Image (tube, rainbow, N blue to C red):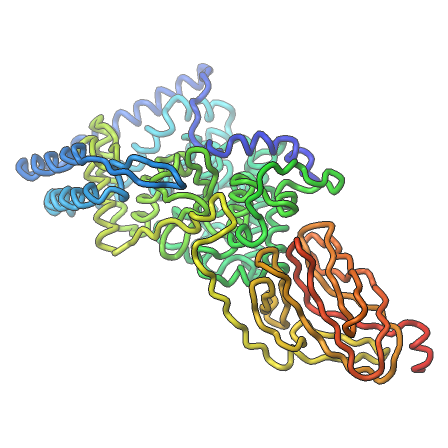
Length: 632
């Protein structure tokens, strides 16, 4: 089923909306309840009221002096003077956050005061019964009785989904630990989750279950990516696609070990990219640039932006309408400004199961993704200077991601937050500078987790490349030790000569030329990169028993169009070879005729400037028909 035409028709609207979280909660439309719906609303409202009263009775006593000291300390945060920072070339005032050293130091004092209070209530509300009460209260508050009733009144199957959720205490606790359903749409979340579990038994156990539930909670619109197909149907297709990729060893090795509560699994599915593009970008990284799949995690996969999506203004889209490309494929043709680069970076992570989000800042589009050491923003400023991540204040998102790494400690975070909500307290604001007592204790319990677990903020990645192709850091060029078996030139029975790319005189990596193992490690390929300065050469020497004419081909992988490479044969003959647009598949170039002499022949390969990236596995020289007859 081809969906590109539908998706492409709205791609401009998507780009314009980059600074808006696709799945942030929207103001719900007015609800019209049937008589049965009003009855259900009353039932859910009573359930919520009973839970709220029960939670209020659980409030423990707190040492008044410690409470006063804590209140005094966090109140003092508001008087910390701001500092000025330069962010992407602009002056920015920083008052609350890690960019202000005075705030950081003062917040350490607040955390000390918070710890004194928390020490007295360390065993507070940690039993399963209390957790269930709190979680169910949080769910009903977030969903609202009215919206639950609206969904349940649609029919027996819909009501059964709500009943299934509310009657499963362990599921309720897990749902709310993972952050609840986006937009409070718990009915759709349960529809998604049920569909995935019916599609595969593996989604019932281990991290497969956590992943299925987390993804179901994240994407709760009526549709998912494909605008004319119900969300649950395509979430199942994405889940099964990723499950096969996991079984085939395509997903990142860390995919099954994202850790913590499993909250990160909310973000392994793409927010707006088709399965066709997901499959294609996997092919790009595995065929065209397999070295990017082996990098350290800051740049793993998303480095394809740095090497192949140059920052370029005023690109007319689509670049080649005659090719009918998806917008992701189109971005590889000429690059683009921050939006296209962020889109390609995001999908490169999504395709391999790396949790990824958009990270817009004022006037700029960037991305953020998970690493084993924590989340990082990429091709943009630090989290603090972003507008929001997944509909959350960016520093709240970062702190949440850190605290969720400690499942036991995070239970205590949730208990404090939910008690405060039941008591009608204000939510924390300005990074713990104001808010209700219990909800602030929840905030500082997160801070305590970060401190106790020694979790570091690993900062931004490639900020200097946000709107530039020039990095201030000099890239270290590592050399590859190539086994002799990958450099051996072979001759077939029909006289066809196969020349591995590594059989060149000096297989050394430079600015433009990178030798690397193929994705399966069974051969060596070379990549002639888009970046770098002057052209570089690959030099091959071939010994022939007789002079004659040969058909020359190269086995290549490309992601762009309208380019050639140049052969220089025995110093005198120059031959242009057209590079086919292979769309990241491996393909032979069209044969060109070379006249070679008996004995040693030298063939030099290079690309003209400006060039586009190209990967090559081997070259072939096939004797032409007349010469083959002489041989026979």
